[in-house]
Length: 162
Image 1 (spheres, one colour):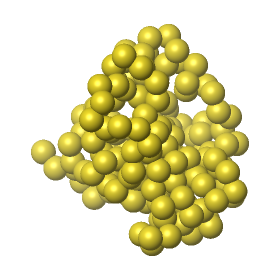
Image 2 (cartoon, rainbow, N blue to C red):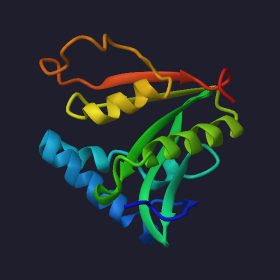
Image 3 (cartoon, rainbow, N blue to C red):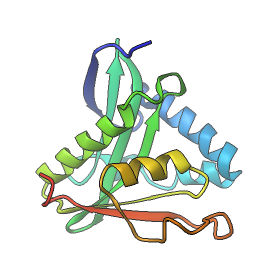
Image 4 (cartoon, one colour):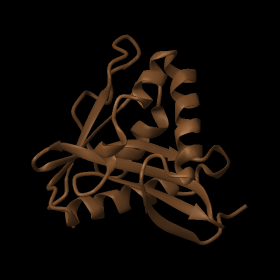
């Protein structure tokens, strides 16, 4: 099954279109990491992901959200990618890669020179995505992350790519 033509839409956290992203990500984090997953989803206010320093975007197919992601200001020259999500029924179709490319282009246009992000040790598909899209791991990717349970940080220099 292919995903229909995709529209990129910039939204604000709290927009009804963000509800599937928030619901599914919260379920995913709680399933993989326990009750702390809920705290992660409420760690940042909607304002953190709002222009001019932040952005939340969704990919819509047939008007329905199928993937999304956001960035927030990490420091003066760095955006931090957060809330990467692909609807469970639309995975393995390159949508997360598209969201990441859209976020990178928008961050570069907003004047950021670098992207920082972290993923968790229980999200191997996210780790694979970031390695495949040119992110530099700030950890040893060959090491077994299970004992540490800490976040796996990555970075990417935007000026070299845009």
